[in-house]
Length: 217
Image (cartoon, rainbow, N blue to C red; front, side, top):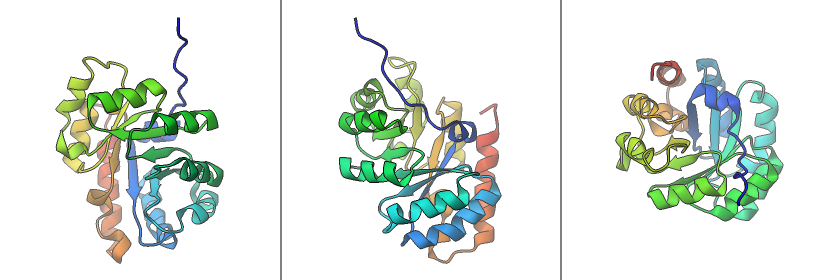
């Protein structure tokens, strides 16, 4: 007889918000001004990606400045060394685009939530059964919200976060289909990290917050 799978839950603030903003910047110092706007617009969870140089070094400063208001996760984690560095830097949760039960086990042992990516039922179930906090349906734009309803047939307890190609209308549809949260990048951030209008960023962010806050979704 096997015991219950050990699973570290997602941060409650992220679950309540039902929205994770994926931030990809040219350099880590560019996070600050954008996070100021996102926090003001009501965003409560941001995934900082390791494709942005300097993320590890800058994360503790961001936590000191914004940690009382938002959950700060680290994404694009693909190996054990990066996972260790993210945990040591204070990441509130971890996201990876790949299916790796070894990374799930490492994060769980460290007591940090992890959301591994996958697309096929086999990939998603492998991560979920290994103890993932949630699974990232990626790239979600290739399947659509009805895919999650189909997955719920064999996997009724699956906790899913769609990511990749999710726009405002898609966010509402995925939440209606049962996603615990949606992961949004370009459709919300637009050109904010390339000198774009921050007022327009705030308006986009507020629109996503409004959609994700609707409890009939």
